Amino acid sequence: MFDWAGNHISVSDRKKEGTVILENMKTEHIYSVYKPLLFSLAYRMLGSVMDAEDIVQEAFLTLYKSGSDHIQNLKAYLCKIVTNRCLERLRSTSKQREVYMGTWLPEPLITTASDETDPMQSYLQKESVSTAYLLLFQQLSYVERAVFLLREAMQYDYEEIAHIVGKSSANCRQIFHRAKRSLSVNDVPDHLGRLDTEKTTSLVEQFMSALTSGDAAQIMKHLSTDAVLLTDGGGKVKALTQPLYGYIRISHSISSFLEKWHGSFTCRIAMVNGLPGIVVYMDEKTWAVISFKVRDGHFTNLYFVANPDKLTQLVSE
Image 1 (cartoon, rainbow, N blue to C red):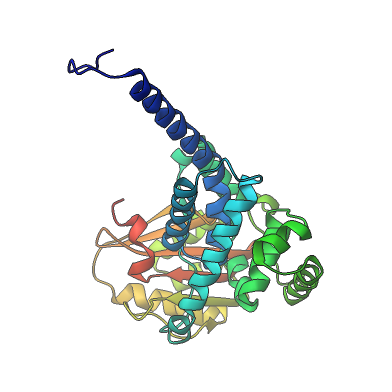
Image 2 (image 1 turned 45 degrees about the horizontal axis):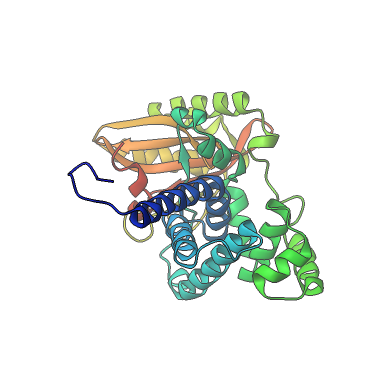
């Protein structure tokens, strides 16, 4: 047997080549099946798209090196790797979070209309949670976060969770209930599955129109009286270092900023963490991503992410 260049190939070499092809096909199939699940878990644990992608790649690299034939439950095996890598990452970066300049907000997860037809992206969109929900996880310890997500979002039983996090099933049950008590029912925000997406999109479009007009009165109309504005500049760009409370102060603050800006200012609607949000451009460069928490037809929370390190996924758009 000969290859395309006329070199002789032995039967054993051909068999080896066939085995490699089959293994690659198997690896690609495993990757396409489990990547959305693993990314969803890692992103919710970390609140960072880049870190979540890195950890998922590390998990598959570990699997590739060790092989999968000896693994009885591949899903649990991969979730264990991702969970432990996330816990390690959270612990190693805890000091960075303590000295973070101003308000920390999750890195926005953006999807577009073209992603609707991609099964993986569609899965991520449904499984992603709002900015408000991700911020609630900051109330939990790292292990509480892991146990809560594995139980609530991934629907694992306590025996499986115990194996993943290295604790007893009874302990995991206690941790889960403690975490659930910490996340008050009144604090858990609505997300994609519980909101009328068309109505929310309409609200965001109206707010975007008010934003581009720079009219404080128009902006104010869309905010609840007890609205809160949180901005994340990460010390890299000018941003509020503390939350701003009240619809009057927020609307005037936004209007005042836009009045002082003499460059071009444009916006577009995007799906941000599974909900309609806004991408803002200043002089044709991505400046911020805005997401919202909605109640009774008004925005109660506005989240401005302007830290350029968290907007790298949008730079090329």
